[in-house]
Length: 253
Image (spheres, rainbow, N blue to C red):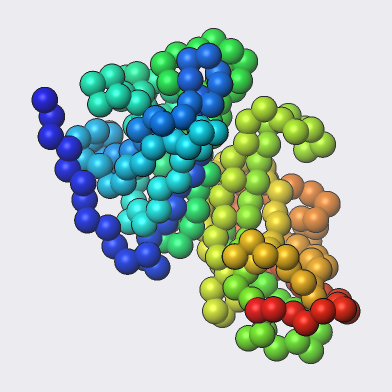
């Protein structure tokens, strides 16, 4: 029997977070399932006996692993003796590696234990293969259109979201990655080659009282009207402009 090695974690500020959901073979959420983050070896393959984080899914099949040191990892779910690797393969050679970035939360597509031929699983597998492709680093900043001093802004979070199907439909699979805005109002993260909708809010998930998003631009591209197409080389920085608006209650930072 292989011995599992749990690597010591770094300080929270130097680490990332990963979230997702596990489905059973019947396509329903799987509760109480072991989920682990496995390090990659020198050949870029999953080393399933070296775990950097481990948890179990809740009653809705969701899991969250925090304090992950930046790097490349694979996801392993299910029994130790019969694991399933992301994106739903029982063969580690078919698994995908994910990049964990410092200070960022990566949401992983749902994947099922074992195998399934359902349309949802097929799309998830295809998208997972796409997400295994190299990404590109995107930079940007948040500015305020007005006299508000930026130091009075709460800590902000920028989210990039993709959903299957058209942008007007709910879709059957999704991918979300987000990052906090730094003290100098800048942000930086890696995006996989997909099209994204961008949103901004408070990092603590409280309402962004006193401000509305006036514009999101990349050069001449209006990203409030168009998706950010990261499947092609992008240059420049994303500018998110917030506009102060009257509010009847004090703004809580």
